[in-house]
Image (tube, rainbow, N blue to C red; front, side, top):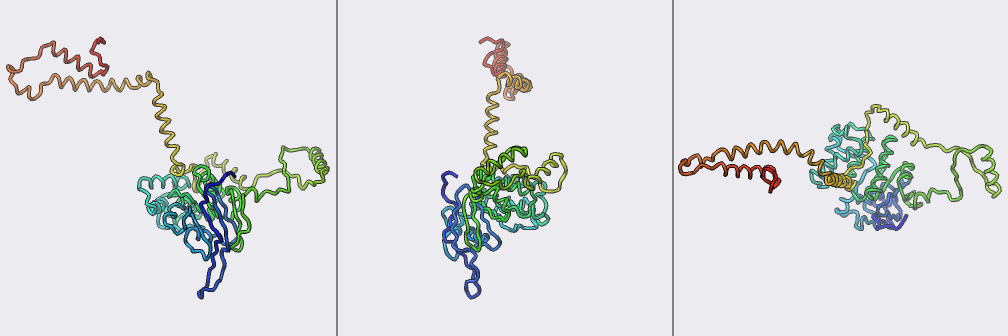
Length: 398
């Protein structure tokens, strides 16, 4: 990775000790943890059950106070109310109001963040479309499956367009399709929106796919930390992948390797993992337009999470195309409308000119001399000029 920007999350000597009724130390959940999460990165927090992951997250959110050590989020303590508005949190268990439907749920959380109604309604619809719950938006949350509740929980975590997104087991209860969609969404949010994401999961394959750095906890202590690809690479081995070789060629390669006093550990054909195979089979079924009653995602990220660049580009493109339109094409399309508009306009003007006003009708004919034919002709020429709008009298002469 290149140069890093200011850290979003910093923890130094973070320790949490749970005590009994008599304030005697009972469990050391987190033990002198040093954590450094940089801006615009996806960071993985791993460890077996009881290793202190959830306790660490709760301290980062200000839900628990550390026994020792210090924490800063965006340079402020996690208890600062202003900091909380910049954080989105998906807990391990989705706690939602069962009697509300999806739209009402997202609207409720949008109100908590004091998002204006018009913007709130727009975000709700975009998030429902993004997580694939538009068709099921009117169903009560209590009727949702666990996977659908996780999708709604993720939408809830994004309603305030947070700068820091904390995801605790985001793919729990999701099928392989939903898991892949969530991982794609995390990648898009980090790449396009440049959000900082802290992801805690027992699904190690998910962490490997999306996290740029990770740490592993055990017994509350940090066992290792670093770049994902560096931690997973085995520097003492060399792997070569090529097209299928004949037995004779493989034998020659083995002889060359043995000449360097090395051993060929295995010669096998590469294979897809089960997730890739599963998604390929389902994708073929979707292309055949087979019906399903599950959640269906469009694969599009919510517009307000994409900085609104698409809408602006579309508007500029429409204005440019209108400006570049040839004048003769514009005149061809506009002329019929103008012709239709001229007839009623001319008719109205004729009535105004020919019909005497009320004041003129009340005036005796002897007092107001009748207009001559020449004057009437001049008035008609002026009226025709105004109707045509070309600045010339009838006949085309100046």
